[in-house]
Length: 523
Ligand code: G4P
Image (cartoon, rainbow, N blue to C red; front, side):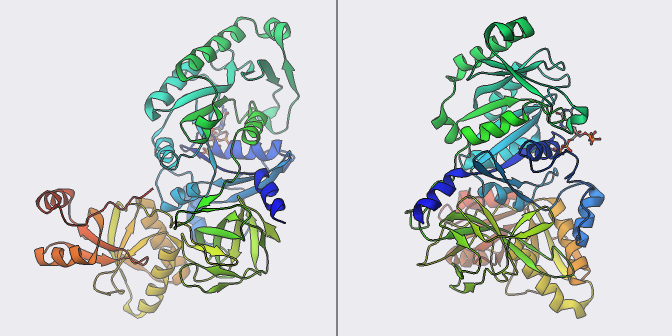
Protein backbone atom coordinates (compact mmCIF):
# COMPACT_ATOMS: atom_id res chain seq x y z
CA UNK A 1 0.00 0.00 0.00
CA UNK A 2 2.73 2.47 0.91
CA UNK A 3 4.34 2.27 -2.53
CA UNK A 4 0.87 3.05 -3.90
CA UNK A 5 0.79 6.24 -1.93
CA UNK A 6 4.24 7.28 -3.12
CA UNK A 7 3.34 6.49 -6.74
CA UNK A 8 0.05 8.35 -6.48
CA UNK A 9 1.72 11.34 -4.85
CA UNK A 10 4.29 11.45 -7.64
CA UNK A 11 1.42 11.84 -10.14
CA UNK A 12 -0.02 14.85 -8.34
CA UNK A 13 0.46 18.43 -9.48
CA UNK A 14 -1.18 20.81 -7.05
CA UNK A 15 -1.04 24.41 -8.16
CA UNK A 16 -2.79 27.76 -8.21
CA UNK A 17 -3.01 30.49 -10.80
CA UNK A 18 -2.07 33.93 -9.52
CA UNK A 19 -2.80 37.07 -11.49
CA UNK A 20 -4.17 40.57 -11.47
CA UNK A 21 -7.89 40.81 -12.38
CA UNK A 22 -8.42 40.67 -16.15
CA UNK A 23 -5.05 39.14 -16.95
CA UNK A 24 -6.92 36.06 -18.18
CA UNK A 25 -7.03 33.61 -15.28
CA UNK A 26 -10.62 32.53 -15.91
CA UNK A 27 -10.01 32.10 -19.62
CA UNK A 28 -6.84 30.15 -19.02
CA UNK A 29 -8.52 27.91 -16.46
CA UNK A 30 -11.19 27.05 -19.00
CA UNK A 31 -8.61 26.32 -21.63
CA UNK A 32 -6.65 24.06 -19.29
CA UNK A 33 -9.87 22.09 -18.83
CA UNK A 34 -10.43 22.07 -22.60
CA UNK A 35 -6.97 20.71 -23.31
CA UNK A 36 -7.22 18.19 -20.49
CA UNK A 37 -10.43 16.92 -22.08
CA UNK A 38 -12.62 17.80 -19.09
CA UNK A 39 -14.82 20.00 -21.27
CA UNK A 40 -15.38 19.58 -24.97
CA UNK A 41 -15.66 23.26 -25.73
CA UNK A 42 -14.57 26.34 -23.85
CA UNK A 43 -17.36 28.48 -22.52
CA UNK A 44 -18.98 25.50 -20.77
CA UNK A 45 -17.57 26.37 -17.39
CA UNK A 46 -17.52 30.13 -17.59
CA UNK A 47 -16.95 30.88 -13.94
CA UNK A 48 -18.57 34.26 -14.02
CA UNK A 49 -22.28 34.48 -14.46
CA UNK A 50 -22.58 31.01 -15.93
CA UNK A 51 -22.96 29.09 -12.69
CA UNK A 52 -26.52 28.21 -12.10
CA UNK A 53 -26.36 25.94 -9.07
CA UNK A 54 -27.77 26.97 -5.73
CA UNK A 55 -25.81 29.72 -4.13
CA UNK A 56 -26.06 31.59 -0.90
CA UNK A 57 -26.65 35.29 -0.72
CA UNK A 58 -23.07 36.20 -0.31
CA UNK A 59 -22.39 34.54 -3.59
CA UNK A 60 -25.08 36.75 -4.95
CA UNK A 61 -23.01 39.66 -3.79
CA UNK A 62 -20.07 38.12 -5.56
CA UNK A 63 -22.10 37.88 -8.75
CA UNK A 64 -23.35 41.45 -8.46
CA UNK A 65 -19.82 42.69 -8.13
CA UNK A 66 -18.51 40.42 -10.80
CA UNK A 67 -15.86 39.03 -8.53
CA UNK A 68 -15.07 35.68 -7.14
CA UNK A 69 -15.04 35.71 -3.36
CA UNK A 70 -14.91 32.00 -2.82
CA UNK A 71 -12.23 29.65 -4.01
CA UNK A 72 -12.84 26.60 -6.08
CA UNK A 73 -10.86 23.41 -6.39
CA UNK A 74 -10.65 21.68 -9.73
CA UNK A 75 -9.27 18.18 -10.06
CA UNK A 76 -8.67 16.66 -13.46
CA UNK A 77 -6.42 14.04 -15.03
CA UNK A 78 -3.93 15.08 -17.67
CA UNK A 79 -1.75 12.42 -19.25
CA UNK A 80 -0.42 10.30 -16.40
CA UNK A 81 -0.89 13.07 -13.89
CA UNK A 82 -3.69 14.17 -11.62
CA UNK A 83 -3.92 17.95 -11.59
CA UNK A 84 -5.32 19.84 -8.60
CA UNK A 85 -5.98 23.45 -9.54
CA UNK A 86 -6.85 25.70 -6.62
CA UNK A 87 -8.50 28.93 -7.60
CA UNK A 88 -7.45 32.09 -5.82
CA UNK A 89 -10.04 34.85 -5.62
CA UNK A 90 -9.44 37.29 -8.44
CA UNK A 91 -10.62 40.59 -7.02
CA UNK A 92 -8.22 43.35 -6.24
CA UNK A 93 -9.00 43.41 -2.56
CA UNK A 94 -7.25 40.93 -0.34
CA UNK A 95 -8.45 38.31 2.00
CA UNK A 96 -6.57 35.87 4.15
CA UNK A 97 -8.33 33.22 2.16
CA UNK A 98 -6.25 34.05 -0.88
CA UNK A 99 -3.03 33.75 1.04
CA UNK A 100 -4.06 30.52 2.65
CA UNK A 101 -4.87 28.88 -0.67
CA UNK A 102 -1.27 29.54 -1.62
CA UNK A 103 -0.08 27.63 1.43
CA UNK A 104 -1.78 24.52 0.05
CA UNK A 105 -0.10 24.39 -3.37
CA UNK A 106 3.22 23.03 -4.61
CA UNK A 107 3.57 25.46 -7.53
CA UNK A 108 1.95 28.58 -8.95
CA UNK A 109 1.27 29.78 -12.46
CA UNK A 110 1.68 33.55 -12.65
CA UNK A 111 -0.42 34.89 -15.50
CA UNK A 112 0.52 38.30 -16.87
CA UNK A 113 -1.28 40.49 -19.36
CA UNK A 114 1.52 41.09 -21.85
CA UNK A 115 0.39 44.67 -22.37
CA UNK A 116 0.68 45.41 -18.66
CA UNK A 117 3.46 43.34 -17.16
CA UNK A 118 3.57 42.97 -13.39
CA UNK A 119 0.51 44.58 -11.78
CA UNK A 120 -0.02 45.22 -8.05
CA UNK A 121 -2.08 42.16 -7.22
CA UNK A 122 0.30 39.86 -9.06
CA UNK A 123 3.13 41.29 -7.07
CA UNK A 124 1.40 40.79 -3.72
CA UNK A 125 0.52 37.20 -4.54
CA UNK A 126 4.00 36.59 -5.83
CA UNK A 127 5.48 37.79 -2.55
CA UNK A 128 3.42 35.20 -0.67
CA UNK A 129 4.75 32.52 -3.01
CA UNK A 130 8.30 33.77 -2.63
CA UNK A 131 8.09 33.70 1.15
CA UNK A 132 7.32 29.99 0.88
CA UNK A 133 9.79 29.32 -1.96
CA UNK A 134 6.94 28.17 -4.18
CA UNK A 135 8.09 27.43 -7.73
CA UNK A 136 6.58 29.85 -10.25
CA UNK A 137 5.74 29.26 -13.89
CA UNK A 138 5.21 32.62 -15.61
CA UNK A 139 2.69 32.69 -18.46
CA UNK A 140 2.90 35.75 -20.72
CA UNK A 141 -0.72 35.89 -21.80
CA UNK A 142 -2.51 37.85 -24.54
CA UNK A 143 0.35 37.44 -26.99
CA UNK A 144 -2.26 37.68 -29.76
CA UNK A 145 -2.55 41.39 -29.00
CA UNK A 146 0.01 44.19 -29.24
CA UNK A 147 1.79 44.69 -25.95
CA UNK A 148 5.23 44.96 -24.48
CA UNK A 149 7.92 43.05 -26.34
CA UNK A 150 8.94 39.76 -24.69
CA UNK A 151 12.26 41.22 -23.57
CA UNK A 152 10.54 44.28 -22.10
CA UNK A 153 8.27 41.92 -20.20
CA UNK A 154 11.21 39.86 -19.01
CA UNK A 155 12.93 43.03 -17.78
CA UNK A 156 9.81 44.10 -15.96
CA UNK A 157 9.46 40.73 -14.21
CA UNK A 158 13.12 40.41 -13.36
CA UNK A 159 13.42 43.97 -12.05
CA UNK A 160 10.09 44.27 -10.24
CA UNK A 161 10.25 40.87 -8.62
CA UNK A 162 13.99 40.37 -8.48
CA UNK A 163 13.59 36.96 -10.06
CA UNK A 164 15.76 34.97 -12.46
CA UNK A 165 14.04 33.75 -15.62
CA UNK A 166 14.41 30.85 -18.00
CA UNK A 167 12.41 30.96 -21.26
CA UNK A 168 10.82 27.61 -22.10
CA UNK A 169 8.19 28.70 -24.65
CA UNK A 170 9.01 31.98 -26.31
CA UNK A 171 6.83 34.00 -28.70
CA UNK A 172 7.85 34.06 -32.35
CA UNK A 173 6.66 36.98 -34.43
CA UNK A 174 6.14 40.67 -33.83
CA UNK A 175 4.12 41.81 -30.83
CA UNK A 176 0.43 41.33 -31.55
CA UNK A 177 1.07 39.01 -34.50
CA UNK A 178 2.04 35.80 -32.74
CA UNK A 179 3.27 33.38 -35.35
CA UNK A 180 4.11 30.47 -33.10
CA UNK A 181 6.13 29.47 -30.06
CA UNK A 182 9.76 28.51 -29.81
CA UNK A 183 10.22 25.48 -27.57
CA UNK A 184 13.69 26.31 -26.30
CA UNK A 185 14.46 22.92 -24.86
CA UNK A 186 13.59 20.99 -28.03
CA UNK A 187 14.51 23.87 -30.35
CA UNK A 188 11.32 23.43 -32.36
CA UNK A 189 8.66 25.83 -33.57
CA UNK A 190 5.09 25.09 -32.50
CA UNK A 191 2.19 26.46 -34.47
CA UNK A 192 -1.42 26.01 -33.43
CA UNK A 193 -4.38 26.76 -35.66
CA UNK A 194 -6.82 29.26 -34.28
CA UNK A 195 -10.46 28.41 -33.78
CA UNK A 196 -13.23 30.94 -33.13
CA UNK A 197 -12.43 32.42 -29.69
CA UNK A 198 -10.50 29.24 -29.12
CA UNK A 199 -13.66 27.34 -28.25
CA UNK A 200 -12.20 24.13 -29.67
CA UNK A 201 -8.76 22.63 -29.92
CA UNK A 202 -7.22 23.46 -33.29
CA UNK A 203 -4.57 21.49 -35.16
CA UNK A 204 -1.03 21.90 -34.04
CA UNK A 205 2.21 21.37 -35.94
CA UNK A 206 5.77 21.11 -34.74
CA UNK A 207 8.51 22.21 -37.12
CA UNK A 208 12.21 21.56 -36.83
CA UNK A 209 15.38 22.99 -38.37
CA UNK A 210 15.09 24.25 -41.94
CA UNK A 211 11.33 23.75 -42.03
CA UNK A 212 10.93 26.09 -39.08
CA UNK A 213 13.27 28.67 -40.57
CA UNK A 214 11.56 28.47 -43.94
CA UNK A 215 8.25 29.22 -42.29
CA UNK A 216 9.15 31.73 -39.60
CA UNK A 217 12.29 33.25 -41.13
CA UNK A 218 13.88 36.12 -39.27
CA UNK A 219 11.27 36.05 -36.49
CA UNK A 220 12.55 32.66 -35.37
CA UNK A 221 16.13 33.92 -35.39
CA UNK A 222 15.13 36.86 -33.26
CA UNK A 223 13.28 34.66 -30.77
CA UNK A 224 16.34 32.41 -30.47
CA UNK A 225 18.58 35.40 -29.89
CA UNK A 226 16.30 36.78 -27.19
CA UNK A 227 16.31 33.46 -25.38
CA UNK A 228 20.08 33.22 -25.61
CA UNK A 229 20.34 36.69 -24.10
CA UNK A 230 18.17 35.67 -21.17
CA UNK A 231 20.08 32.44 -20.68
CA UNK A 232 23.33 34.38 -20.65
CA UNK A 233 21.93 36.69 -17.97
CA UNK A 234 20.34 34.06 -15.76
CA UNK A 235 22.25 30.89 -16.51
CA UNK A 236 19.56 28.94 -18.38
CA UNK A 237 17.20 26.27 -17.12
CA UNK A 238 17.96 24.87 -13.69
CA UNK A 239 15.37 22.55 -12.17
CA UNK A 240 16.72 22.93 -8.67
CA UNK A 241 16.66 26.74 -8.82
CA UNK A 242 13.11 26.52 -10.15
CA UNK A 243 11.96 24.19 -7.38
CA UNK A 244 13.38 26.49 -4.73
CA UNK A 245 11.55 29.47 -6.23
CA UNK A 246 14.73 31.26 -7.32
CA UNK A 247 14.13 30.89 -11.05
CA UNK A 248 10.86 31.16 -12.91
CA UNK A 249 10.07 29.16 -16.04
CA UNK A 250 8.63 31.49 -18.67
CA UNK A 251 6.02 30.40 -21.19
CA UNK A 252 4.10 32.62 -23.55
CA UNK A 253 0.82 32.30 -25.38
CA UNK A 254 -2.77 33.35 -25.59
CA UNK A 255 -5.48 31.81 -23.46
CA UNK A 256 -8.07 33.28 -25.79
CA UNK A 257 -6.71 31.74 -28.98
CA UNK A 258 -5.33 28.59 -27.30
CA UNK A 259 -1.67 29.32 -28.00
CA UNK A 260 0.62 27.75 -25.46
CA UNK A 261 -2.12 26.15 -23.37
CA UNK A 262 -1.09 22.57 -24.04
CA UNK A 263 2.51 23.55 -23.47
CA UNK A 264 1.60 25.01 -20.10
CA UNK A 265 -0.06 21.74 -19.07
CA UNK A 266 2.97 19.82 -20.30
CA UNK A 267 5.28 22.11 -18.34
CA UNK A 268 3.25 21.50 -15.19
CA UNK A 269 3.72 17.78 -15.74
CA UNK A 270 7.41 17.91 -16.58
CA UNK A 271 8.78 20.57 -14.24
CA UNK A 272 6.26 21.34 -11.46
CA UNK A 273 7.11 19.34 -8.35
CA UNK A 274 4.89 16.63 -6.93
CA UNK A 275 4.12 16.70 -3.19
CA UNK A 276 7.13 16.22 -0.95
CA UNK A 277 7.37 15.26 2.76
CA UNK A 278 6.04 18.07 4.92
CA UNK A 279 7.65 19.50 8.02
CA UNK A 280 5.87 18.84 11.32
CA UNK A 281 5.82 21.17 14.33
CA UNK A 282 8.55 19.06 15.94
CA UNK A 283 10.79 19.68 12.93
CA UNK A 284 10.64 16.08 11.63
CA UNK A 285 9.57 15.52 8.05
CA UNK A 286 6.34 13.58 7.57
CA UNK A 287 7.00 10.86 4.99
CA UNK A 288 4.48 10.68 2.14
CA UNK A 289 3.65 7.08 3.00
CA UNK A 290 2.99 7.72 6.70
CA UNK A 291 -0.67 7.33 7.75
CA UNK A 292 -3.05 9.97 6.45
CA UNK A 293 -2.52 13.55 7.62
CA UNK A 294 -3.69 16.82 6.13
CA UNK A 295 -4.08 20.50 6.90
CA UNK A 296 -7.35 22.40 7.03
CA UNK A 297 -6.59 25.46 4.89
CA UNK A 298 -10.07 26.75 4.19
CA UNK A 299 -13.44 26.57 5.85
CA UNK A 300 -16.61 27.63 4.19
CA UNK A 301 -19.97 27.62 5.88
CA UNK A 302 -23.46 27.85 4.49
CA UNK A 303 -22.42 27.17 0.92
CA UNK A 304 -25.86 25.87 0.24
CA UNK A 305 -28.41 27.79 2.34
CA UNK A 306 -30.87 24.91 2.26
CA UNK A 307 -28.34 22.72 4.08
CA UNK A 308 -26.61 25.24 6.35
CA UNK A 309 -23.55 23.10 6.23
CA UNK A 310 -19.88 23.70 6.68
CA UNK A 311 -17.13 22.51 4.42
CA UNK A 312 -13.57 22.17 5.60
CA UNK A 313 -10.99 21.93 2.80
CA UNK A 314 -8.10 19.68 3.70
CA UNK A 315 -4.85 19.49 1.78
CA UNK A 316 -3.68 15.90 2.01
CA UNK A 317 -0.01 15.74 3.00
CA UNK A 318 0.64 12.08 3.72
CA UNK A 319 -0.98 8.69 3.37
CA UNK A 320 -4.16 7.52 1.77
CA UNK A 321 -7.41 9.18 2.74
CA UNK A 322 -10.29 6.74 2.80
CA UNK A 323 -13.81 7.99 3.13
CA UNK A 324 -15.40 6.70 6.31
CA UNK A 325 -12.14 6.27 8.21
CA UNK A 326 -12.32 8.44 11.30
CA UNK A 327 -9.63 11.08 11.74
CA UNK A 328 -8.47 13.03 14.76
CA UNK A 329 -8.24 16.81 14.89
CA UNK A 330 -5.02 18.17 16.36
CA UNK A 331 -6.47 21.11 18.28
CA UNK A 332 -8.49 19.04 20.73
CA UNK A 333 -8.05 15.35 19.94
CA UNK A 334 -11.67 14.96 18.89
CA UNK A 335 -12.76 12.50 16.24
CA UNK A 336 -13.75 13.82 12.83
CA UNK A 337 -16.07 11.65 10.79
CA UNK A 338 -15.36 11.48 7.09
CA UNK A 339 -18.50 9.84 5.81
CA UNK A 340 -19.34 12.99 3.88
CA UNK A 341 -16.17 13.71 2.02
CA UNK A 342 -16.31 15.38 -1.34
CA UNK A 343 -14.29 16.80 -4.13
CA UNK A 344 -15.71 20.06 -5.35
CA UNK A 345 -15.88 21.36 -8.88
CA UNK A 346 -17.35 24.82 -8.71
CA UNK A 347 -20.65 24.37 -6.95
CA UNK A 348 -20.85 20.69 -7.71
CA UNK A 349 -19.84 18.12 -5.19
CA UNK A 350 -18.88 14.60 -5.83
CA UNK A 351 -18.30 12.05 -3.11
CA UNK A 352 -14.65 11.20 -2.88
CA UNK A 353 -13.66 7.68 -1.79
CA UNK A 354 -9.93 8.12 -1.51
CA UNK A 355 -7.33 10.80 -1.84
CA UNK A 356 -3.54 11.03 -1.87
CA UNK A 357 -0.92 13.62 -0.96
CA UNK A 358 -1.52 16.78 -2.96
CA UNK A 359 -5.28 16.22 -3.25
CA UNK A 360 -7.86 18.46 -1.65
CA UNK A 361 -10.66 16.82 0.28
CA UNK A 362 -13.74 18.76 1.31
CA UNK A 363 -15.11 17.44 4.59
CA UNK A 364 -18.78 18.24 4.64
CA UNK A 365 -20.36 19.03 7.96
CA UNK A 366 -17.09 18.68 9.83
CA UNK A 367 -18.11 21.21 12.42
CA UNK A 368 -15.59 22.42 14.98
CA UNK A 369 -12.65 22.12 12.63
CA UNK A 370 -10.46 25.19 12.66
CA UNK A 371 -8.34 26.83 10.01
CA UNK A 372 -4.76 25.66 10.09
CA UNK A 373 -5.19 22.57 12.18
CA UNK A 374 -4.04 19.09 11.28
CA UNK A 375 -6.36 16.12 10.85
CA UNK A 376 -4.75 12.69 10.98
CA UNK A 377 -5.19 8.94 11.19
CA UNK A 378 -3.09 6.92 13.60
CA UNK A 379 -0.65 8.43 16.10
CA UNK A 380 -0.82 12.19 16.67
CA UNK A 381 0.91 14.46 14.23
CA UNK A 382 0.78 18.21 13.82
CA UNK A 383 1.93 20.50 11.06
CA UNK A 384 2.86 24.11 11.81
CA UNK A 385 -0.22 26.35 11.88
CA UNK A 386 -0.94 28.50 8.85
CA UNK A 387 0.22 32.08 9.10
CA UNK A 388 -2.34 34.65 10.10
CA UNK A 389 -1.96 37.92 8.35
CA UNK A 390 -1.74 41.42 9.55
CA UNK A 391 -5.20 42.99 9.50
CA UNK A 392 -5.42 46.44 7.96
CA UNK A 393 -9.06 47.29 8.60
CA UNK A 394 -10.64 47.41 12.06
CA UNK A 395 -14.15 48.08 13.27
CA UNK A 396 -16.06 47.63 16.51
CA UNK A 397 -19.13 45.52 15.86
CA UNK A 398 -22.43 45.08 17.65
CA UNK A 399 -25.88 43.87 16.63
CA UNK A 400 -28.24 46.68 15.75
CA UNK A 401 -31.02 44.78 17.47
CA UNK A 402 -29.86 43.73 20.96
CA UNK A 403 -32.26 40.79 21.02
CA UNK A 404 -30.08 39.21 18.33
CA UNK A 405 -27.07 38.98 20.66
CA UNK A 406 -26.95 35.18 20.51
CA UNK A 407 -27.07 34.94 16.70
CA UNK A 408 -24.52 37.73 16.56
CA UNK A 409 -22.07 35.79 18.71
CA UNK A 410 -22.62 32.55 16.77
CA UNK A 411 -22.07 34.35 13.46
CA UNK A 412 -18.92 36.12 14.62
CA UNK A 413 -17.48 32.88 15.98
CA UNK A 414 -18.27 30.99 12.80
CA UNK A 415 -16.81 33.61 10.47
CA UNK A 416 -13.77 33.81 12.70
CA UNK A 417 -13.31 30.02 12.51
CA UNK A 418 -13.60 30.26 8.73
CA UNK A 419 -10.92 32.91 8.70
CA UNK A 420 -13.16 35.50 7.05
CA UNK A 421 -12.42 37.88 9.90
CA UNK A 422 -10.36 37.92 13.07
CA UNK A 423 -12.53 38.61 16.09
CA UNK A 424 -10.53 40.47 18.74
CA UNK A 425 -12.10 40.25 22.17
CA UNK A 426 -11.34 42.77 24.92
CA UNK A 427 -11.88 41.74 28.55
CA UNK A 428 -14.01 38.77 27.52
CA UNK A 429 -16.61 41.09 26.02
CA UNK A 430 -18.01 38.99 23.19
CA UNK A 431 -20.97 41.25 22.62
CA UNK A 432 -18.78 43.99 21.20
CA UNK A 433 -15.80 42.43 19.42
CA UNK A 434 -13.34 44.30 17.28
CA UNK A 435 -13.55 42.87 13.81
CA UNK A 436 -10.24 42.88 11.98
CA UNK A 437 -9.79 42.06 8.30
CA UNK A 438 -6.98 42.05 5.80
CA UNK A 439 -8.92 44.12 3.24
CA UNK A 440 -12.00 46.32 3.06
CA UNK A 441 -13.97 43.85 0.99
CA UNK A 442 -13.76 41.28 3.77
CA UNK A 443 -15.53 43.72 6.06
CA UNK A 444 -18.37 43.94 3.52
CA UNK A 445 -18.44 40.17 3.24
CA UNK A 446 -18.71 39.96 7.03
CA UNK A 447 -21.65 42.37 7.20
CA UNK A 448 -23.37 40.74 4.29
CA UNK A 449 -23.01 37.21 5.60
CA UNK A 450 -24.12 38.21 9.10
CA UNK A 451 -27.29 39.54 7.55
CA UNK A 452 -27.87 36.75 5.03
CA UNK A 453 -26.89 33.75 7.14
CA UNK A 454 -27.45 34.79 10.75
CA UNK A 455 -30.19 37.32 10.24
CA UNK A 456 -28.27 39.96 12.16
CA UNK A 457 -27.87 43.53 11.06
CA UNK A 458 -24.42 44.56 12.26
CA UNK A 459 -23.43 48.07 13.16
CA UNK A 460 -19.77 48.81 12.61
CA UNK A 461 -18.11 51.67 14.40
CA UNK A 462 -14.73 53.32 14.21
CA UNK A 463 -12.14 52.57 16.85
CA UNK A 464 -8.91 54.34 15.88
CA UNK A 465 -6.90 51.16 15.68
CA UNK A 466 -4.22 51.09 13.03
CA UNK A 467 -1.63 48.54 14.02
CA UNK A 468 -1.71 45.24 15.88
CA UNK A 469 1.17 43.36 17.44
CA UNK A 470 1.42 39.97 19.09
CA UNK A 471 2.41 40.17 22.69
CA UNK A 472 2.60 38.01 25.83
CA UNK A 473 1.04 38.19 29.28
CA UNK A 474 3.98 40.00 30.90
CA UNK A 475 4.13 42.71 28.25
CA UNK A 476 0.33 42.98 28.25
CA UNK A 477 0.47 43.72 31.96
CA UNK A 478 3.08 46.41 31.40
CA UNK A 479 1.09 47.95 28.56
CA UNK A 480 -1.96 48.12 30.82
CA UNK A 481 0.13 50.02 33.35
CA UNK A 482 1.44 52.39 30.68
CA UNK A 483 -2.15 52.97 29.55
CA UNK A 484 -3.73 53.98 26.26
CA UNK A 485 -2.96 50.64 24.57
CA UNK A 486 -5.75 48.12 24.25
CA UNK A 487 -5.22 44.41 24.75
CA UNK A 488 -7.35 41.76 23.10
CA UNK A 489 -7.57 37.97 22.78
CA UNK A 490 -7.87 36.16 19.50
CA UNK A 491 -9.60 32.81 19.15
CA UNK A 492 -6.35 30.97 18.43
CA UNK A 493 -5.08 32.00 21.86
CA UNK A 494 -2.90 34.87 20.65
CA UNK A 495 -2.70 37.94 22.86
CA UNK A 496 -2.68 41.18 20.87
CA UNK A 497 -1.76 44.79 21.57
CA UNK A 498 -3.79 47.31 19.60
CA UNK A 499 -2.22 50.66 18.70
CA UNK A 500 -3.86 53.83 17.49
CA UNK A 501 -0.98 54.60 15.21
CA UNK A 502 2.35 53.21 14.23
CA UNK A 503 4.27 56.15 15.79
CA UNK A 504 3.08 55.20 19.22
CA UNK A 505 4.24 51.67 18.59
CA UNK A 506 7.59 52.79 17.23
CA UNK A 507 8.19 55.09 20.18
CA UNK A 508 7.34 52.37 22.63
CA UNK A 509 9.66 49.92 20.91
CA UNK A 510 12.43 52.51 21.10
CA UNK A 511 11.82 53.40 24.74
CA UNK A 512 11.15 49.87 25.99
CA UNK A 513 13.04 47.48 23.74
CA UNK A 514 12.44 44.55 26.10
CA UNK A 515 8.69 44.49 25.42
CA UNK A 516 7.35 41.62 23.33
CA UNK A 517 5.68 43.23 20.31
CA UNK A 518 5.93 40.96 17.30
CA UNK A 519 4.53 41.54 13.81
CA UNK A 520 1.68 39.20 13.04
CA UNK A 521 2.76 38.17 9.57
CA UNK A 522 4.70 35.00 9.93
CA UNK A 523 4.99 33.47 6.49
P1 G4P B 1 -9.50 37.16 -15.06
O1 G4P B 1 -10.16 35.88 -14.75
O2 G4P B 1 -8.02 37.13 -14.84
O3 G4P B 1 -10.12 38.35 -14.44
O4 G4P B 1 -9.60 37.41 -16.65
P2 G4P B 1 -10.57 36.79 -17.73
O5 G4P B 1 -10.15 35.41 -18.10
O6 G4P B 1 -11.97 37.00 -17.37
O7 G4P B 1 -10.16 37.71 -18.96
C1 G4P B 1 -10.33 39.10 -18.93
C2 G4P B 1 -10.52 39.60 -20.34
O8 G4P B 1 -9.34 39.33 -21.11
C3 G4P B 1 -11.65 38.91 -21.08
O9 G4P B 1 -12.18 39.86 -21.99
C4 G4P B 1 -10.95 37.82 -21.86
O10 G4P B 1 -11.65 37.42 -23.01
C5 G4P B 1 -9.68 38.54 -22.24
N1 G4P B 1 -8.57 37.60 -22.47
C6 G4P B 1 -8.14 36.57 -21.71
N2 G4P B 1 -7.09 35.97 -22.29
C7 G4P B 1 -6.84 36.62 -23.44
C8 G4P B 1 -5.88 36.46 -24.48
O11 G4P B 1 -5.02 35.60 -24.46
N3 G4P B 1 -5.96 37.35 -25.51
C9 G4P B 1 -6.89 38.34 -25.56
N4 G4P B 1 -6.88 39.15 -26.61
N5 G4P B 1 -7.81 38.52 -24.61
C10 G4P B 1 -7.78 37.66 -23.55
P3 G4P B 1 -13.55 40.59 -21.72
O12 G4P B 1 -13.73 41.52 -22.85
O13 G4P B 1 -13.56 41.14 -20.34
O14 G4P B 1 -14.57 39.43 -21.71
P4 G4P B 1 -15.18 38.62 -22.95
O15 G4P B 1 -16.25 39.48 -23.47
O16 G4P B 1 -14.07 38.44 -23.94
O17 G4P B 1 -15.63 37.36 -22.33
